[in-house]
Image: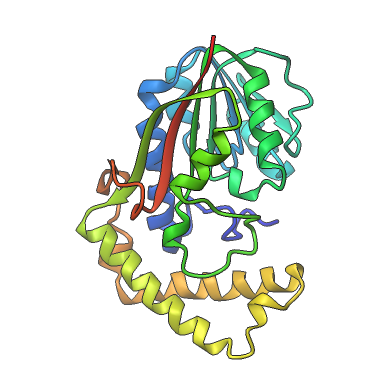
Length: 260
C-alpha cells in the first residue's frame, strides 16, 4: 500500500486537500476530550499527531503500514509507535490508556465487535474513546478498502452490545464551500460509475477492483482540482463543523466512556 494510495489520504497531494482537511478537523474536534496516556489506532501519516501530543501525557500510535510507522518514529522519536494489524491489540496491556483515538478505522475491520472489546480492555476505567467513521448515508459507491460502513443507528447498535457509555453523538459536516465541493464530487463519481456498464465493481476480485478504484478515484480528485482550484485548494479544517445531524453528515463523530 503506497503512501499515496487514496486509502491513506495525503497531506501533500493538492487534490487530496478537501479530504485531508475533513480528516484533520476531527483532531481539532477531539482536543477537549484528549487526556492522559493516549493510544491512536490507525495513526497513518501522523495527520493530527502534533495536536494530540500537546493534549496528552504520552502518545502511542499503531498502524498496519510499516513505512508510515517508520516515518513517525523518525519524526516523533519521543513517542511510541507499533507496527501491526488490529484486532487484537497484542502489545497493549489491560487498562493502560486514558484515551483511545480511532478515526476512519473501524470500517476497515472485519471483526468490529472484537475491535471494540480490545479497545475497552486497554482503556482505564472512565477512559475515553473518540471514534469517527464515514457516514454510510453519504456513500456514493462501493469502497474496496472498507469491510462495511455504518449509519448512526448501525454504529449505536454495534456499541449496544458493549459496556461503553455514549457521551456525545455528532456528525462532521461543512460550510457552503465544502458542500459545493462534495456535491461536485458526487456528480463526477456518478458519471464514472455509468462507465462501468458491466458492473465490474461488484464482480472483480478485490485486488483488481482496488486498482480500478484507485485509478478512477485519483483521476476524479485531480480533475476536480483542475476545474475548481480556488475551491479545492482553499478548503481548510475551519470550513468543517460539528452538527447534531447524524443522518446527513459526512462523518460520524462519537465519544464513548468506559464505565468505572
